[in-house]
Length: 87
Image (cartoon, rainbow, N blue to C red; front, side, top):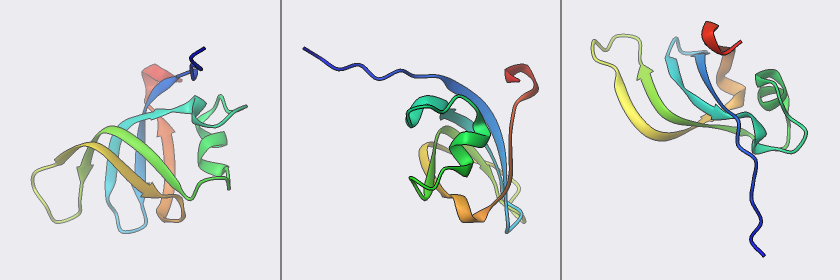
């Protein structure tokens, strides 16, 4: 019997301590019992936030860089917010 994992993808915006901003998607159900972005960010279970379909805007660079998947160290996040349409 195959085990299926529940998925709840949300579009988010992240700001890092170096000024970098990231837009992308996260799976809120990555860890059991989580249904809010703050649950996922505040969890100590994993040190990194997995962001898919990410666009990174680094300070000083004109063109954003797109990535299929990135891992963001939670210690470097200043704030993370769901997109207005996702709240």
